[in-house]
Image (tube, rainbow, N blue to C red; front, side):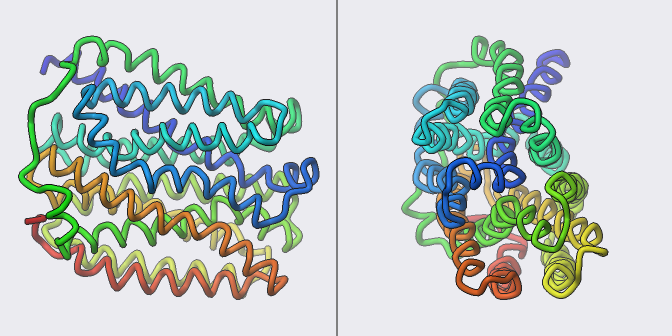
Length: 386
C-alpha cells in the first residue's frame, strides 16, 4: 500500500464514519418542533430514532454478504449513497417520507457500521486501537455537529431542512471514496474460519454482541430524549441542544482515548469497570440533580458512552482472527445489538409518559448498565472467537 493510497483510504474511512450518526443525532434537538408541527406522541417520536436501529438489527447480518458479493469498498460506497438519498427523502413534505427516508438511511448506516471494522482489520491489522479511535471519533464528531447545529439550522430553514441538510457531508464522503471503489477488486476471496452458525454457538460472540447492544441502547435513548429531559428542567431549547452537543463532544474524547487504551491492553476488564462506575455517577446526577450541574452530568455520561462505543468496536477486532471473521462478528454483534437498542427510545418514552417524570426512565438505564457490566466483563477477557 503506497503512502498516497493509505492516506486516501484513511480520509475516506474518516468521512464515511462522520456520516454514520448525524441522521440520528439531529432528531433529538428537534423533538419539540416535530411534535408541535405533526402532533406525534412521544412514543411515535421515539420510533423515528428506533426505525434506523431496526434497520441496523435486521440488515447488519446481511452486510457481510453484500460486501462479499460486490466487494467491501463498493458496499461502503453504496452505504453512503443510501444515507444521502434517505436524508434528502425525509426532508420531503409528507409525514410518511420522514419514516421512509429514515428507514433507507438506516440501511446505509447498517452497511457502514458492519464493514468499517472489517476494513480496519484488513488494511491496518497492527494498528487496531489507532484506526478504531479514528473512525469512532469521527462518528462522535458527526453526532456532535448534528446535535449542536440542528436547532440553529431549523430556526432558519425549518426542522425538515435541518434534517435534510446532512446530505452535504454524505456527498463529500462519496466523492472522496469513489477512487477506492474504482481501484478495489470487485470481490475479495478471503473467507472466515468462523461461520455464522459457529458464532451462534460461541459464548464469547454473544457476550460481545450483548455488550454492544446494551451500550447502544443507552446511547440512542439519550440522543433521542436528553434535550427533552433538560428542557423539562427549565433549560431552553437552544441550550438543551448545546448540552447534547457537549455530551457528544465529550463522547468524542471517550471514543478517541478508550480504543487506544483497549488496543494497548491484553485484558479490557479494568476499562469496563472504570466506565461503568463513571456512567452510574452520571445517570444518578441526571436523576437527582437540577439544571445547575447538568453540564457536568451530560459531560460525564457523554464521555462514557463514547468510550463504551469505541470499546465495543475495538472488541470486534480484538476477539477475531482475521478481517473476514471481524466482518462476521461485526455483523452478528451489530444485528443482535441494535435490535436490543431499538427497544430503548420507545420504552424510555413510554415510561416517561406513564410516570410523567424522568427518575423511573433513568432507573431503567441503571438496569441496562448492570446488564452491560454482566456481559462486558467476560467479553473483556483475553481470547478470540473459536
